[in-house]
Structures are given as structure tokens and as C-alpha cells.
Length: 352
Image (cartoon, rainbow, N blue to C red; front, side, top):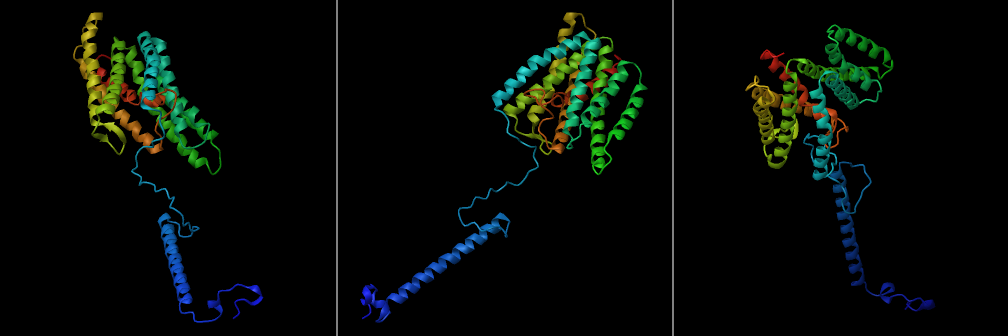
């Protein structure tokens, strides 16, 4: 009756007549919509719980949560260049640095001593820069500390070492800022000095050994055996390494690579024993093979030690000075103990 009043078009079933068909169907649609909304709310709630932030603003779209895999305490693995590029850089660095080291070793005297000074200074500077604190004092303090033992041996004044260390300690404490950061800086400074002393003290025997009779043979054997150990371990471990040597310390090192490194170091000793008689050296014999084994074992231990330290500091490389190798510390980590234990081995034979 009212469906045509004032020209308003209204479905006449709404204004009059029974609603037995229209109303129930509308009610069913409302109930279906409400059920869908409740399901959507439950989905949002469960997704917020999944993110671990119940108070976060609900997000009901597709989940974009990036699940972080559980940490396995492995070494930091920043993006690295392609393997071929890295190998090429290693070879170029070795082609430039290797001959320079060998020439200084053959020349002896202050050429060799100066090279030891330079290596100690650069390695100690890297060590000071690794400390997790912003302080310009630490790298120079490390450099001076690393030079104490080499200088004391070079000038034949053992008393120089304790005097120099005393002066450095007083100087370091005097230059510390006297505020709330002093305690943290003092701790970092002590760690810098200890690491620098380790570097300088383990490089010092090379000066004594080079100055000994036929010292050039001993030092060259130690250097070449260390290089052979590192190279063989890297190449064989990268290609055929399967069993991990010490996963908590260095997940990349393998048993196969370590064995190859030891074989390479011993092979250098055997090669030196075979070749030296051609140059008039005939008194070394099997002692060089034993020296190769000592160097190989020492180099592996030094490599693991530096890996543990870098892992503790959360870094992959100690520096950047040697492309393809990292820093100076990354290159001499095995050489440092090899020089010291090699010196003790030669001294045990009475050649120093």
C-alpha cells in the first residue's frame, strides 16, 4: 500500500506482509559475517603471539615475520668476495710480500731486524684496533709494547725491557681519562699491552736465531715450513676437508687440512735437507725434518689460538692490510709460535 507513496520505491515485502523468507535469510548472512570476523580476530591474535610482541598493533595480512635461526655460536660470517677473487688476491699478496720477506732474511743484519720491527709494529697496531673501545691511546701503546723485547735483544741490553715496560705503564695510566670510562679503558689497555707483548716476545727469537751461525738456514726453514703448512691446510681443507678439527673454535678448519699442513711442513724440512748439500751445507741432516714437524705443530696451535681470540672479539679478520689474507696477525698467527718453538728446537741441538 505504501510502496508507491511520493514516488519512493520500496520493496513491498518490507512494509507489509509476512517476513518468513526475507528476514531469516538476512539473519543467516549476518551470522556468517560475524563468524568470519571472529575467525579473523583469532588469526590476528595467534600471529601477534608468534612474533613475541602481544602489545603490538595487530597485523592481519600475510605474515612477514623473519624467523631468525637459533645461534650456533659460529664465527661471524660477513659477506665475502667470490672464492676465485679471494684466491687471486691471496696469490698477488704472496707474490709481492713473499720475495720481500725472503730477501730481508737472506740479507740478515739490520735488514732482517728492521723487518721484524715493522711486522711487530703493524701487528700490534691491528691488535690495539681490535679492542672494542674508542681510544686513540691503545694502538700506539700496543706498538711501543711490542717493540720492547726486540729492541732489548737488538741492543744487547736485557735490562732495557723491565725499564721500558715500567715507563710505558706509568705513561699509559697518566694519559687515561679520569672519568667513569677510566675503568673500561684501563681494562682494554691492559689487554692491548698483553697482546702486544705476546707478539713482540714471540718474534724476538727470530733475531737471535738469524744472528747464530748458519742462522739463515734455520730461519728460512721455519718461514718456508710455516707457509707450506698454511697453504697445504687451506688448499686441501677447502677441497677435500670433511671432518671438523675444532668446531667450537674454528668451524672452517678440518682434520684433512691439518694433516696436509703437517705433511707440507715436514716436506719443506726434507727438501731443505736434500738441497742444502748442493750449496755447501752438509751438517744439518735429519734435524731439518724434525724442525719441519715442530714448525707444523706450532703453526696449527697458533692458528687455533688466534681463531679463539677473534671468535671472542667477534671478528673474522684481524685487519685488512694483506688482501686475500686479512691482516698482519692473520698471516703470522702460526709463524709466531713456530719461531719460538723452532728456536728452542735448534737450541736443544746446540746450534744457538
